[in-house]
Image (cartoon, rainbow, N blue to C red):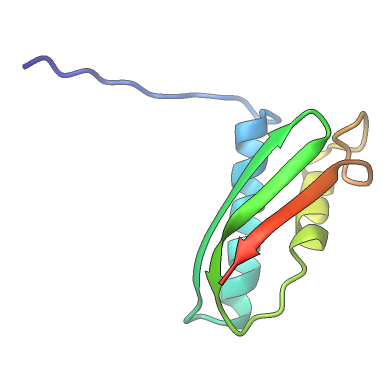
Length: 95
């Protein structure tokens, strides 16, 4: 049986990296308030939209949109249609 090795490598600023940073930042914010939280957060980005989706069980009070915008700003997206103050954020997070 043949074995294949594959990997993905993207540079800073790539939508995959941006989404990973946002997902990690939201999870960090949740766990900082509720270390026993259970959370599965994913993000997808395209053009001027960011989708934050997942399943979260926690007592933490986290503003997902504000957290995402802060991370986008920290990364340096302050221009174009995906800048932190212009992108449309769609939340699909449930317990």
